[in-house]
Image (spheres, rainbow, N blue to C red):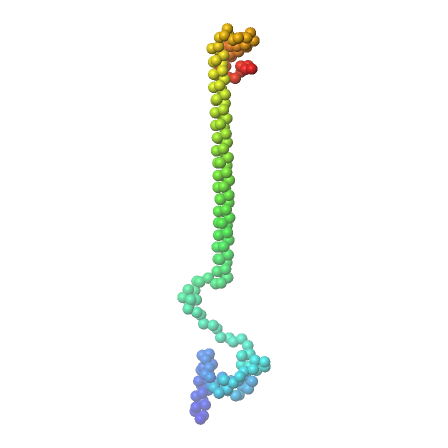
Length: 186
């Protein structure tokens, strides 16, 4: 008996040093002299009193490292991950804002191009109208210059044709040419 008791003590001391205990060696905190036996392990535990074995306080046992942590020691921690995610989200947001600005610039440039096209068409129309007026003026002055005043029925008509022919001839001699629009058409 003494020999076996000594052996049990040695085993208990060794297991305490190693950090493992046998079920036979667990001691009840309310009465340290009475060990907890397998028959008393199944007994109900009261959590209301402070004598419960669950209220021993924090243990000094370290949690073993997991597989992923052991395989990849450089893996980012959760705080680092959230910072990375926030950085990525902010960069994505910045890119999205830049993209919106580019789209707005494209829209404004397209509107400006459209306005310039319309302005160019209007200018072409004005030029066509001016060219037509000039051509009409040249044709009118040509008719006046070719008109014989003696064929006009009234005296006022003959006087008007002669006055127009003189004005056109004076403008042509000054270098204005026929059709510059300075004749007096009534």
